Length: 513
Ligand code: SAH
Image (cartoon, rainbow, N blue to C red):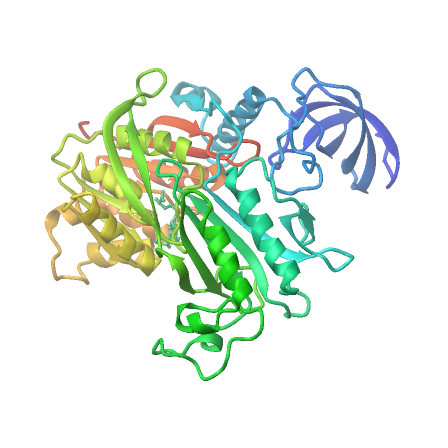
């Protein structure tokens, strides 16, 4: 086999897509990973990093374009790290995601290919795979000439590509960002520099309730709350620094320009909430823990409709729930697909009104409340306290009284109840629920959580996953512990990117469904 050196130019036909969206092709048995190349392309690629049997290469020229290649409508597509699949037709993107889930189940989960194929339904795609995100977090920085810019990080780096018009986001984002940038430029408000830790504005977070039309802007600044207010919420003796985003406490001291900024933003149709978030830590975490509303309400509302996933076009069933969203709460980013994802989880839960259900990793109680409408009792568990406070309020708001929420780690709360350590209020149906729903972050479920689920022996488990690799690992544990997979279905929550959600329904072997 020929070995390749850095900077060698190679012509290769792309046959497959890797898990990070890169094109994969072979030359004389040597495997090339070519970012931005799509299956069916014949390309010239430049070797960047070479190993014995494979190399990473950069796309130099598309010699013969693939029939699945589309012209990306985003001019930053190749530089930006956000969308890895924009050059691939949407139909092929869905096929790639279906295959990615399938491969992980086979390779990591150890399930037979025929078994996986028999259980997997067609992935649920989007009708309009652009402008779907209800949340955007734009980093703020400076370009080489010192101008304040905002945009997105270039792939695998922290250098910002100036772009206020991301095609995945809400159309209002651009106007909001331009207004804030103009304010910063005119008033010499500095952007945060993560290498020196200096500068003020770190990020701009924008959220939109797609159904309600309500908008939220949260400006993340490199300050401590104590710089602008005391703990008791009284006026601080320190004056806010020039250019700092003052809080309500300092209304009189708000710079006239800053007042103008808030007024200009407030005039955008739909604007409901403008806030400042404090983050002075040297960290990649975007938001600090404290938020101060400087105009309007602290939260926005959104509505999620329940859909019939068994009928074509997934029609609205007539049932809907309203949710309160704060800058800090987790809320699914693709509202159109979230309705389908939750409706599918609800369908897989197979509720008749008599069941007791645990909803683990429940966030602000979205899935829990969907379930509560159809169950006898739902118990939600979530690690973030504010999310649980929101979940309780969301239950009240929707007139739901059969959902109870607990703050804590799923792997601690569930065993604590099961082992009887938390005796107060423990009822038998909590120990032996009819259904357990889990929706963990990418790292999947903790072992202690899975083993308690197995001990509780619910007839049904519904697993909602945002990472099919950890899903496959966890499904293996559950299947080894006496469960079998009934159905698997991908839901594309993240069009143009390599990510995909999956919902799996499982039943306990031998239990009557
Ligand atoms: N089901 C919700 C949230 C899913 S995201 C929804 O659809 O909106 C995963 C959630 O798990 C996040 O809210 C995160 O805060 C929470 N989480 C992360 N680790 C956890 C743990 N160990 N125990 C409980 N919740 C956890």
